[in-house]
Length: 542
Image 1 (spheres, rainbow, N blue to C red):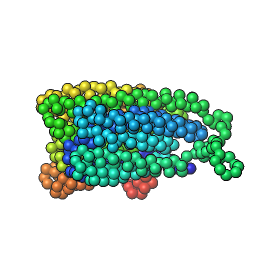
Image 2: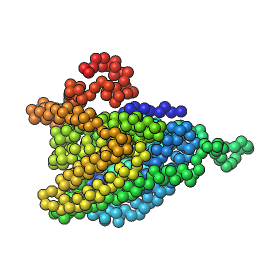
Image 3: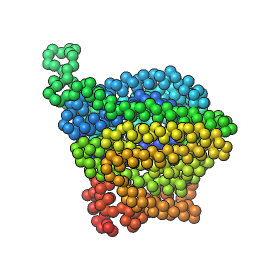
Image 4: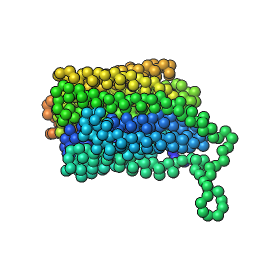
């Protein structure tokens, strides 16, 4: 039996894996931007919302429901139902996602015309098989997360990223001589290669960790083909299929509804942004280039702290479900607030650093003119991770509908606002950044109110945000002074390297000096490493 991961260890594993993925993703986009330009990257980025619409609709809320059910039935000691739920989810997802992949392949040209950029069609065709392959990956991931086997899921993400980088760079390099459009389509093939290698790894992992009760056995007799039989159903061990399917659907339908609406809204958002910029007087190439800067560079950078949020949410959801199902509400609340505390400790300095280092951060992509957009979008580095962690906590509490409903309402408002602000002279793409920051803030507040109501506890904001804020601002001031006085290595890469080396110890020291991080909190945040921390830091100030 594979070892289960603790909350802190699972979050740490997913965070480290996600950090490696994000850093490698940022690094490999640098040659892509230089080979394809911001316009070529814009073609690739414009295809992603349409791909995401078909993919999310195909997957729906089945992975979320499966993770909840697996965690619940494993806690109850019913492994047969765990495997039964997995097979039910896999069968449904495989059928629906295959139809979604075929539909995207057939409707690629029509979708590209709706986006206002017909050149996106080959990119959508290259992405179509990934709808089916990534859907299967999510079912395997939900099964592993529900059983609290976080490490193999993190490895699968690393394998996926390695395949994505190799495939995208190879495809863009080989097809770029045939034109900008084919270069973008070659980069899109990286997603297909990533999904293939990740699925193969997950199949091997599942065959190793699945419960024996879920394995078929062949009856004794002469060799040759015989019908495969499943172990006899013990009284009370299995759930009636109709009842299990009903429970899965009740958990899945709110997320499924959001999965149908949100990607379509994002698709509509891209179309309105493109058409709004064209209406404002930009050429088609300029509008695509601006969207490429925003989506491919700025959002790539400001969403890097989401790595921690996704790691925490993935590890937090089954732990909160187990505590809540066991009637330990105080433990569930403590785990939720621990996730918020850890997220704020990373998100706050990230937002400040993106404001200070916006120039060199965008210069490494070859688009230094995107620096003002990065400064304006920096608050997303705090708001988006907090939003994801709160949504994961609510899903772990069985409240799958509220986060989707809040995000849907806010996204509708954002789409309408984007359609207006991009047409206003002198605002353009900067208005899209402002609506994005507002979207994340509103959804976070709505989710937090729901979380406090369900738990019956208020979020301790004095420790979550107020305590680390002075340390984050002071760290940003130190780096700004070093940049202004030239106390950094030369060039944009040198400035970024200096910031990454100087900022963490300065920030940690200020947290300790200001009592924003106590020894008890550090022990709780780094529970798997507590023994090593005690040897490494024998004397803590307080």
